Image 1: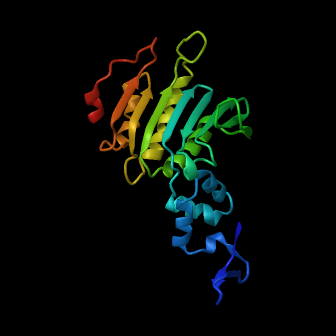
Image 2: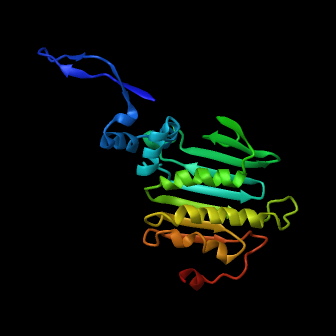
Image 3: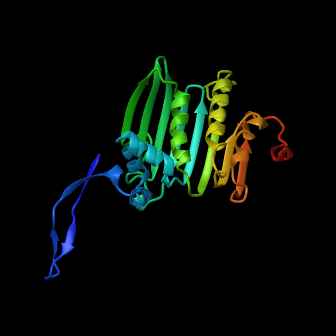
Length: 247
């Protein structure tokens, strides 16, 4: 991707005139300059730049400019992973939007993605089909990119693992391998971090205590203000011991 900069100088009459427009490759800029540019971009622009060339993608993945996320809400079912992302208003929003929804649907021969910006199911809906791609792996790969760029404190992180999402409200036995894949994916994302992820409000809907233990140890306890762990209203989880989380 080539960026064009107008080069100005001040003449004797103190007017700005163009010397010459010259094409400059973005990746050839000094690292400090490029890092400053990336630090001030919204995350939508950063994701676009990652696709420009391998050198730029590697640079972005190395310095990890902030995503500016404020909230991550995830709902997991046996055939669907729904992600809701909140961004601040103003220049750090996601291309002008404060809310982004991403649905990862399981299909017979791949994964169907549905994006919504602003209001779910109403405006700015985009569909994309990924042939032979697993919906959970696709979701976790996207979440990995987002969370690797998370440098500020999250207001809320919520993960709902829904074993009772069918009409009859029966236990979905197909959920267990999906739940394990999601939880294992989060461990792979959070464990290598140089420092624990910082967030104020941690929420999970689960059926067993060991599911919490796969994520909570990687949260910065010095920043954490609130923990909410629950089962479904009609199907409360097994007995919960807070002291087990401290081990």
